Each structure stands twice: as C-alpha cells, then as structure tokens.
Image 1: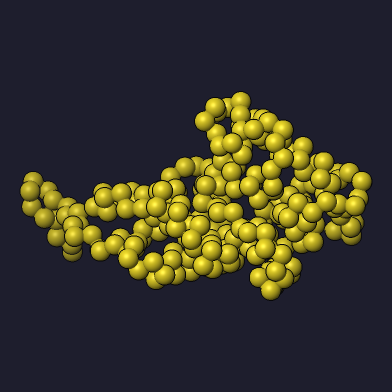
Image 2 (image 1 turned 180 degrees about the horizontal axis):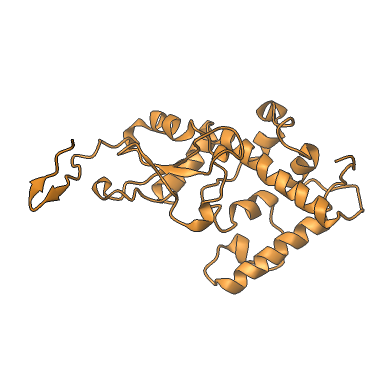
Length: 230
C-alpha cells in the first residue's frame, strides 16, 4: 500500500486487448468486429464493453468522462483513481517503466470499478438513456422469465448503489419484479454499475414503453380445485 503505482503504458494495455481479441476470434467467428479483429487498435471503452458478459454496458462518451463535474466524489471510492482514469481514456503515459503483475491487476481492477460507477451516472443522462433505449429495443437485457409476462423485455438494475454489495439483476416493467440475468457471464457484474434508479427513471422518461400489468396470474389447482391459502 506504501508503494506508488506507475502508470500503465500504452504498449501493455494494447497487448492485453490484443490477447483477448485473438482468444475471442479463435473461439467464435461470429464475434463483433471490435472483439474479433486481431491487431486492431481499439479504445479501452470499446474493448471493455465488448467483453463476454458485458452486454448490459453502453459506451460512455469521452467528453462525459473528461468533465470533472461528472466524476465528483469518485476519487475517494476508487483506488488508483488517476491511473485508472488514464487507462479508461487511453491517455499515453510518459512512463516507460513496466508494471508488475500485481500493480497491473490492481490498476485494471480499479479501471473496471471506475468505469462502472461512471456508467451508472451516465445512463441517467439523456445520451446515456438513448444508448440504453437501443439495447432495450433489441432485447439485449433479456426478457422476463415469467410465463404470463409474454417475454416482456427487461432492464438492468442494482439492488444497491454501493459497490461490491450486490450483483446486477434484470427488472421486468410488466410484473415489476427482478430476476437473474440470462447468462452466467452476467451474474458477477456489480449491481452498482447500473444503480437502483435507472429502470424506473427510464420508464418515466419513455412513458410509452411502460406496459400494462399482466392480465393473468397463475392459480394453483389440485384435481381442478383451487388451492386455498390457510
């Protein structure tokens, strides 16, 4: 903790992205151009959002991240804040020193956390909601598993705004309940990266997308007779 971390060099970052890109291109020929092109120089944000399991994330505009007002209070929540911010914004480092494996892991972990917390704020803005609207229309957040909701598209939601306290869930605007995401890769995403407010503000903003409550409810029966609750 007493050692000052050195900044992540551009060559190290690009190497990590290239390694991931090559692995993904080998496992699937249907991956996106961003994740599947070998040697292509992509931004950290695009790389991060195209990782498997990160389908819920939208790409935050650089201009939003570069405005200090939007990041107010985050420096006290995220370790290695300055280094993580440089990594996210692809800022070239003047350092030629190489990070140790331990330092690299700490900075990369801090970058994920910082981007996630910025993302939770960004998706509450007009531009952020617009980006999430496209994902919602394309069913990228999954559909409600409840039979009587008739595959109603869902929205990501956190059960807490505090990092590392809960995982992301999907909220169904029809039955107004939450469920596990559809793939195991999304289970471990921090719920604070989407927050408790997003789906509800989204439906207030796009009121025409708010569905009617389900018209049917399942009724338990035994030999055709309703099961009465005691």
